[in-house]
Image (cartoon, rainbow, N blue to C red; front, side, top):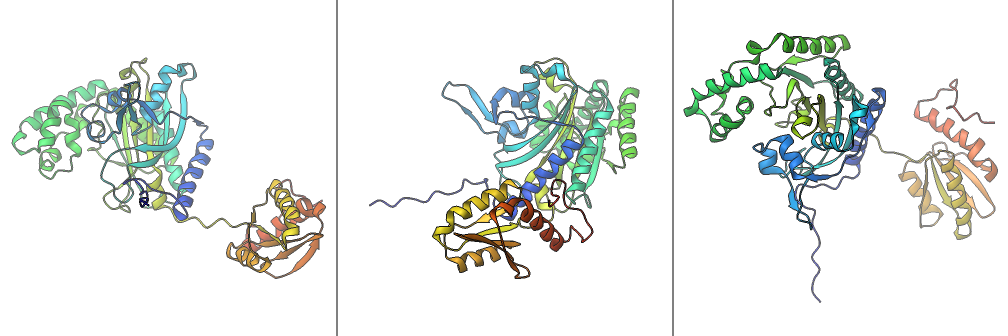
Length: 436
C-alpha cells in the first residue's frame, strides 16, 4: 500500500490558534470598538479583483505589482489578483456600486490580504489587515479624524507607548509637479552614484528614491531638496490645518520630510506610526490622502484618505490576553443524567452564562477537566436533581432546574464577579439581573 504523504502548511501562511488567536481577536475587537465610537460603517469587498484594479491603483512599476501580487487567469481567462491591500477594492466598489450618493463615506473593513514576499517575523504571504477610509471628504478634518481614530486604537490596545506618528505633506498637484521636477534634476546630477533600482525609478517614479534602503542611494537621497520649498499657499494651509487639528485632539506627531508616496494620485497628508519594538519591520500603521485614485480608476474625481495596519503586527505589540474561562462546567454523574445535563447547559447559555460541557469520562475525570479549564462552578447533574459546587470554596448546594437560569444564574455572575474583583459587596448586579 502506497504511503500517503502528510500535507504541509504552505510557506508564508499561518495557522492561528491559542495565544496568537487571542491576540488576533483582541486587535479586531478593539478596532470594532473604536469604529463604533467614530461612527464608521463596516464594508466587505471581494478577496480577489480584476488585476487592473490593483495595477492601476498601485502603479505598474511598484514592487507589489511587479513582484508580489498573486495573479492568475480563471477558467474564463479573466486575469484576477488576490487582494494585496483594501483601498483599491473599496474605491472600485465606490464606483461600480454607486456609493457616490452616500459621500462622505466613513468605512472600515478587515480580513486577509496576499503578497508574495520573503516570510519573516510579523510578515507573511497571507496576512491580515484592518483598514479605515474616508471617501468624498476633501477637508483636512477628515485626515485628523482618521489619525485620531488610529491613535485611539493604539491606546485601546495598550501599545501607544514607544509608537511615534511620523507625518509629512505631499502638497497639491502644483506642489508635487514642481518638487518632482526638482528631484529629477537633482538625481540626474547623481546618476553615477545611484543603484540600478533607483535609475529605473528616476525615469518613472523619482519620489521613491527618497525612501530607498540601498546604501548607495542614501547620499543623493539625503541631500535632495525638501518639499517645503515648493509648497503652494493652499498646500501649506492644508498641512497646518491637519497638524493643528492633531494638536487640538492631543495626538502627538513628528515631522518626517522624507516620508513619501510614489504615485501621482497621492496628495497632501502621508503618515506612518512606527516603532523600534519590531526590529526592521518598524511600521505598524500607515496611510495617506489619495485624492486622485478614484479618478485614476475611471470614476469621478473624488477625494479620499485612509490607512491600514497589520493585525499580526499589532498583536505582537500587545500584551497577551488572558485565557477565556467558563463560569460553569456541566458534570453529569452518569449516562442517565446526560439529557438533564444538556438541558441545563442550554438554559445557562441562553441566560448568557459561559458554560462548558465534556463529552466523555466519569465524574472524577470530568471534575478534573473543570478544574483544568479554571471554571468557577461545577453543576453536578444527577438523573433526579442538580447540585451547584463552588470550585473555589468547595461549597455545594442543591438547586432546582426552574431556578437554574434565573436566580442561580444571577448568583453565579455575582459570586464569580466578586471573586475576580470586578464586583464589590456593595456593587449592583449587571443590568437585567435583579435576582428576583
